[in-house]
Amino acid sequence: MSHFDAEYWNKRYDSADTHWDMGKVSPPLQEYFDQLTNKEAAILIPGCGNAYEAHYLLNKGFSDVTLIDISDKLIDKLWEQLGVAYEGKIRIINEDFFELKGEYDLIVEQTFFCALDPSLRKDYVHKVHELLKPGGKLVGVLFNREFEGKSEPPFGGNKEEYIHLFSPLFKLTTMEPCYNSIAPRAGFELFVIMQK
Image (cartoon, rainbow, N blue to C red; front, side):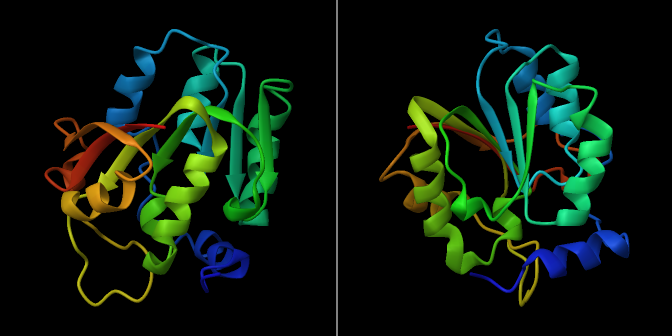
């Protein structure tokens, strides 16, 4: 297990050291969500952070959204914000993603992969594969840039690395530069759809 544990993330949230936080749903993901028709799909958002994607999905009428994050302080806040308002439509779990059990139609990737120690990337690929139902999809945004000499998140990557990592277990249906990233990330993000 990496050293980016609950204590590490609690400190980042306590000190508002959350420069990855856009304050809204990621535009590439919003556009993807807008064309989904199955509102009963079981959706998982790992390393959910402030869960803007979950807010958006629930407001659009989706009824089976699971959030998981290792930060207990964050999860307490999410319960206050979402747990009561969307009771029966949302599960909010304070746990290590790699310990999670369940089956999902869709796993949403938004700044979780880049927050993991790179030594865990193969484990991530296997865990996502395990959690998806047959034909299920991993959909989201990955960095298409390197952060040289970084010892803490975010960690970068590139298309060639992702193809090598994911292709043994997934059909890579989409892996293209985002055309609708927020300005600071323009040119540095790939939108990905990978099917189990």
